[in-house]
Structures are given as structure tokens and as C-alpha cells.
Length: 125
Image 1 (cartoon, rainbow, N blue to C red):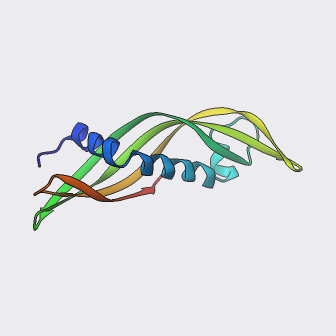
Image 2 (image 1 turned 135 degrees about the horizontal axis):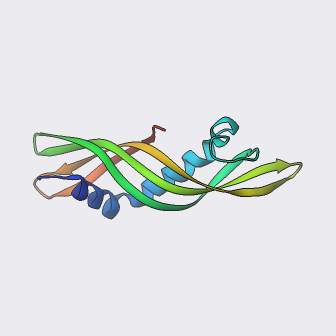
């Protein structure tokens, strides 16, 4: 299958968008105070994903072996996160921030059926 960034994005959007969203949510939840200080003026203990604005395929490589096309690359996701500071037993909302997150991804395409599967995604930055 001939690919370009738009086709790779459409494959991800059609087949794996729930996995992408879940990984993005998990990555934001894993951000520590040091990472959050880059985005919030006030001290933030934690954050959660509010919305994803845009997803771009920054780059990709593909290789075909024995009827399986393997695609690997980098997604950049523009998202809005909500920041919170812990005050005793309560978390106080301190504001929101726009972030750009990078994720390495890979998936395979069966060249006989053109079905995509075996999706993997990991937070890079």
C-alpha cells in the first residue's frame, strides 16, 4: 500500500483513535510537578486531559516483509489540559494550558486484506 502522512493519519483515526486518546490521557495524568510547571504559572500537582485539538503525523517509515507492512512514526498531539493543586483532601482547579505531546507509534497492515492491526503507542515528550 502506498502511504503518505494523510493516509497514515486516516488509518490511525479510523482504527486506533481510542488507543491514542487513552494513551494521551494516561500521559497527562503521569506528568509530575516539574513537567507541569512548564505550562502553568501557579503550582500544579496534577493535570487531566480536557480536549485534543489536533493530531499530526510528524514523520513515519514503512517496511513490507512477507505481506505485512509495518508503519512506525511520530504523532504530535495538540491538547488542552486542566491543572489542579492539592489542598488537603481537595484538588483545586488552577487553570488550563495548551500542550504539545509527542508519541511514537507503530502498526501493521496486512497487504492482502488491507486490514490494520497490532497498534502500539508510547509517550515520547
